[in-house]
Amino acid sequence: MSWELTTLGEYYDVRDGTHDSPKYVREGYPLVTSKNLKGGKINLEKVKFISKEDYLNISKRSRVDVGDVLMAMIGTIGNPVEIVQTPEFAIKNVALFKTDKHQSAAYLKYFLSSPDTKNKMLADAKGATQKFVGLGYLRSFPIKVPPLPVQKQIVEKLDAAFVDIDKAISTTEKNIENAETLFSKTLNKTLEDNLSKEFLLGELCEVITKGTTPTSVGHKFTDEGINFIKIESIANQGNFLPEKMAHIDEECHESLKRSQLAPGDILFSIAGALGRTAIVTDDIVPANTNQALAIIRLKKHLNINKDYLRYVLNSNLTINQSDSLKAGVAQQNLSLSQLKTYKINIPSAPIQNDIVKKIDLIKEQTNALIECYQNKFIQYESLKSSILNQAFSGELTKNAA
Image 1: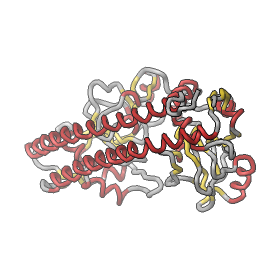
Image 2: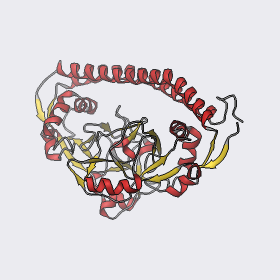
Image 3: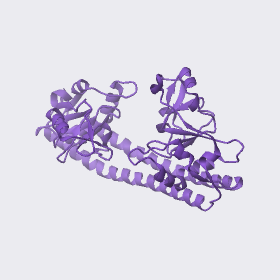
Image 4: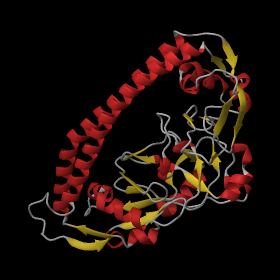
């Protein structure tokens, strides 16, 4: 049985969600966007709600049914989800593929997940700051489809192959989580065993300030230039990720003098993912940052180890204060005034240095273990990609031609 070369639009009914922005309500029907498609499932943890009237209006054109496949088409492109349970949500800026009894939704989901498909869509995507693929593009996207029995045979083989791989991936993810948890417990215990005199963070600092988003003051981001650091530019381990930094020009940098960074500054996230920290190094500057990151600059005459303070800011001694100070669970924000009231334990300089040496060593061992697990994770994902490529080249089915 031969495979047919066609397009997604010729073979499937391809639509998308609403492009409008309905009024959000406290309770109602979930409005699923690209960010809610994760790991082959619909994640409704941070979803917004719309009224029944808006839900019905959107559903006239973009109703989601069992057997449909959704795919993110703005931002993170891909992450297809097969709808297997009766849905009661509307969609916005999400691709909707409707299948019938002569088509396998699971086959389509796997096709959209394949490396060749994802890489082509990412390469063709438009947009400077936020990548997207349009409805017309998706409808004209090429696909090779075999007869339904072969589609089902491919799905069965992929399902069987991925069961063990997904279990191994899940175990690896749990091992990484356990390693991070163990480090966090060790950090907390070490600091709690060395409690000393408390100071307010504001008393220790020459400056506690924050930055500004350039676009809010008439400037634009540039393709290259001076580093502009956002929360996503900082890894959980406290190191900078150059590939996730934005850039601004010299004129913009000079206009944002308040948030120009200096070596030794401690960055502390005060919006969204509270408490992510990093120490500005010589190779990062000149650099600037936005209002989601507080800039903590210690008084020069104080004998405070910056690495010690960063560890304190990452510990339960600070995180528990964040829980009591943050503006609200939904907002996850801290004001600079609140940050200045953090209570910080400052032991003698020799004790600070000893704590840093101990935690640095444990951190190094933890990171080595995590890197080992991450390499395994990459190998498992690579294996899945290889199997998917085999499936859509016809290698997994005897009758494919």
